Length: 382
Ligand code: KG4
Ligand code: ZN
Image 1 (cartoon, helix red, strand yellow):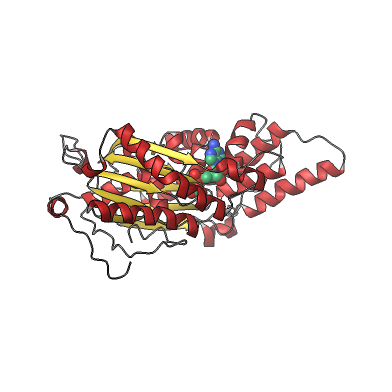
Image 2 (cartoon, helix red, strand yellow; image 1 turned 135 degrees about the vertical axis):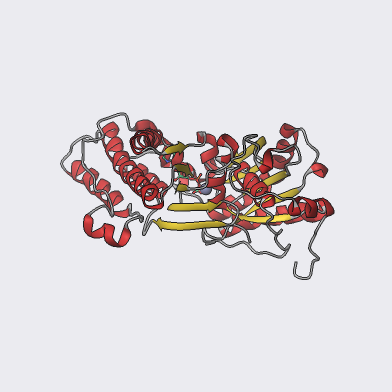
């Protein structure tokens, strides 16, 4: 699309020059810049993995969040097959968009802008969403915002708990990423404090689920199965030893834990013993949640953050939410947990991030931006 003129519609120039800033409003009226009636109506398109998501928001108000998942198509392969996911996005995109408009009771001509996941994610899957969003923006003469999927996972909390405070740490735990972030401004200033040096937390859940004979994606199944004794096996807590903390204070490692569970299960099977699923699942889960919550508390202490926010598929985990709530209360930290169906991939998270970017005066993306499968979390907008 090189050479295509950029679309700069009039109403947006007014919105962008309005005296707003994307950070928390501390004023007594309690109105965030995007909660006013003039807040932008944004459609958000998500297609980075196996969920085709279309969300519609007006500022921080959620109007629609439609998701079509292709997960059943991948179950028998034990993981997402990129080409299958891309084709499923193609088929689902228009019907999902139509459903979202019907739910929000809006006509597409009413929208103020189109936000879309530009990365990170599966390249073919991203391209379907990005091409759809470009077509929509171009046809409607509305601005396009190519945004970061990971930041979307953090931004979704705005729909539940309103503007972010000044100092905020986010624990991002998804299938492909596990990071601790210092969120200075959700629209354009995110600092990664640390991340996983091998497997992501969700990836560890999915791999351990396979070892335990549970279906894909494993996270929700382990969550459900983990009703046993969390101290049944003391599995390793990666990068928590004193010597590791010197270099990797805010980093994570789950590969050793995954291997430890696999070895433990193999040894039991070799000895002809049963696998106590509820206990092993609970013990694995405890190791993951112990490390995630301890490092998240430490990140809050180190940055002086008063609020901790969690996002990404693993943030739907029951034990993680409980343990974080306990430790946050002990440390005097306010915990912000989006409802579980907003933690997994969806279009609303992309829409609300787009709305924040508009409110903060972010410049629309060019219509010839490309998808970036490894977009760093510090790049909020392309
Ligand atoms: O954020 P997400 O929906 O997609 C990515 O961006 O990766 O995260 C998907 C991951 C999968 O690994 C899935 O097993 C995990 O989130 N997950 C969970 C739970 N629900 C989803 N992990 C643990 N407990 C859950 N309840
Ligand atoms: Zn995600």
